[in-house]
Image (cartoon, rainbow, N blue to C red; front, side, top):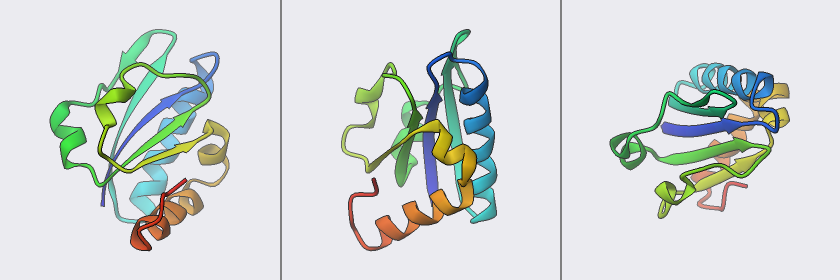
Length: 108
């Protein structure tokens, strides 16, 4: 599965980057490709391209705040989750996304 994600926390520092790393590790553990954009205090890093988004099977928004550019994901399955959830249980979270997509449910 191809996943794109955005990570952003309230302060835009620690949890943003920890969530990014955990999403990458969780997806890798389950054999998926993932690209994770961060929106933090220093701006946007690892920005997702239109092509990245087009090729994605699912979008994960691991955010604690409103992010910029969310309209880019229109028409894609979007999973919203707090950064703390992916930090605590990244593999289990990715498994939940897999199950939701496989059963054609809204993966929330």
